Image 1 (cartoon, rainbow, N blue to C red):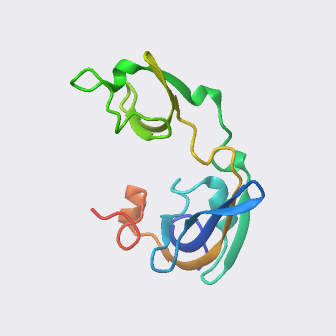
Image 2: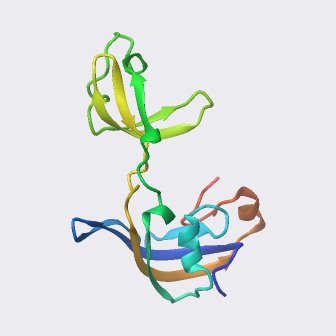
Length: 170
């Protein structure tokens, strides 16, 4: 069996990025804690899937996704100046355990969509938040092995994600 649409893929890999000429490990999956996903259902980066298509169990892989193929480049449009009032508690003051530079906050827009952003700067009137992906501007280096491939169940295809071990549990 090969990796193609409608298959559940189990991988173990190491993800590194280059930081000032040194490879820094960002994520490592193992046979005991693998990455399991439904291929072709937007559960992984399209360029990640493209590099895995056609591989079989036991195949190894190593590839680099340039930032534009991965999480993109930092964009000023993803920086937001949010009024300080949005961060005030019932006492009328911001929570210092929550609102500090470098903290990652989950926020919701008017349509109910969730976003995660980094607090960049805090003033008396506003908070500057960076909603760029943390790996924006980074080339991603993947090295790993295909551990398992199986056909997705009808339920998994209908729901758009893996069920059971390594996947979603209802």
